[in-house]
Length: 386
Ligand SMILES: Cc1cc2nc3c(=O)[nH]c(=O)nc-3n(C[C@H](O)[C@H](O)[C@H](O)COP(=O)(O)OP(=O)(O)OC[C@H]3O[C@@H](n4cnc5c(N)ncnc54)[C@H](O)[C@@H]3O)c2cc1C
Image (tube, rainbow, N blue to C red; front, side, top):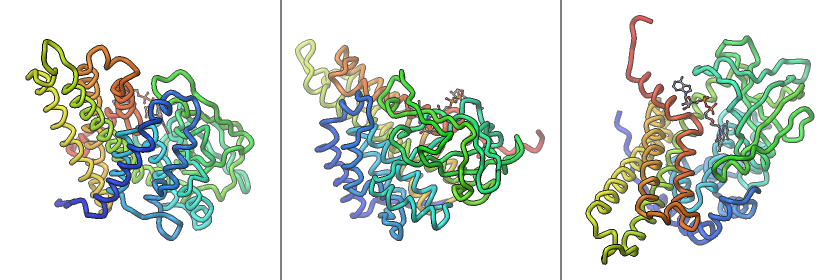
């Protein structure tokens, strides 16, 4: 398989314009966004104004149809200055992508242009309190048909954008307990009777401030909220999750780049034993390793994004590799960045402790790195016996 990618002049120009915007407008408030309890409405409005919520939305529905590689570039650049804003941008675009791919004409008309404009925020609600089997076969969220409605019961956890979202994707069991064909996707509006969204407090990082849990208690969801057909949920997830992984990987590259930049700058200015610490070979060696792994992660992300754009069947294996490698790299690089900053690295006055927390989150969210490893291993192994 030979997948070629090279950034076009338009993509390079686009990357620079997102970088300039993020540096000028988001960087000054990144610390504030990280600490505030509320959804950063002004920053989100800025992203929408600059069409960054429209990147994966088809032109026919008011989007930019910019492609996954361009979207990944935008996530990387936003993440350098504010990983939280990158997550908001991911949620909008990837949520819209679910609707654009499998939604009905009415669902597309209702949501897509509003998501692009930031008039509707999207909440991706997949995680449940109980583990769901690896083939998405046994959701504990139940949806039972009753006339023109499904009656939904159960809980979802950790919905990014939750408190500020107007529409949520849920994946509920519409059939027998362990049939993989039983999972179906629904679009659920906020304020539906029987559906409550509440904030989850007490997390280590900013994303927690707008991470919510959702509870369904005999909630009646109209049948026209079903996306695709009953039982399409597994196929929808199998296509969407590699894209979520690739976006998380792109975000991690941005985080790692910010950590390398901050460390290089600090190493040239911090003087110890009569010279800048960057003149010590051991610091140079750390910086060189950090920059090398970062670049390797970036290339894997761009290749994966190009594979997604080309609709290649290997997307899930490459996305798992990209997510694993880029998030592990970001964790290692940000920990080393804190180390290079010495005691100051542990202080909130410097950005590297925030980057370290954001890097750690990326290893956990979406598909965890352990499950990504299973995906990679499964693509390599063929057993003839059970
Ligand atoms: C800030 C934040 C934001 C989030 N945003 C969202 C969101 O918007 N939407 C959403 O749906 N979810 C979201 N999540 C949830 C996140 O995706 C899950 O926490 C994550 O998928 C792990 O699920 P879990 O917590 O149930 O861990 P578990 O599944 O209980 O896993 C615990 C550990 O066991 C490992 N493990 C589990 N099964 C296996 C296995 N078969 N083999 C090997 N190792 C295994 C895991 O890798 C992990 O290390 C968010 C979480 C956080 C913290």
